[in-house]
Length: 162
Image (cartoon, rainbow, N blue to C red; front, side):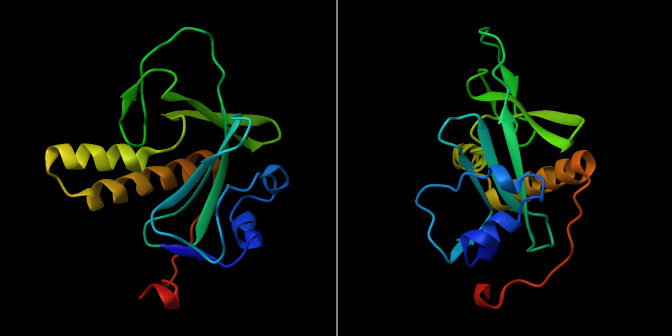
């Protein structure tokens, strides 16, 4: 869990190279608490924003993904984070800049609503959701760390979260 006191705090969670293109999510008021992660799609639908914290950290990490427009072919894919299997409208290639010369991509739920899909699967199977959410955040961090070189620092929870 982490908290944003202002829109500037939210913007600071993204890498400096990404901060200039952020479109703020609709309806978010500050201070804003984030339990698992925050994801939203920009109005045009071209970008998807993700803010999460690595397991054991309360430091928010922001990533901006671009949606792959792909061809007109409707192909089924598997989300690499929540393992949802869906059409190319539901699961698509999302890409992000590593630097000015290199991009990386990963097949993910196009709207990053992985949590909702995990909740649905847990409800249907009678399993507990917390383990699945921890695995989801671990996969998010692994991508951020291995593909983008983002390091998370260990931190104490915010005083208000206790």
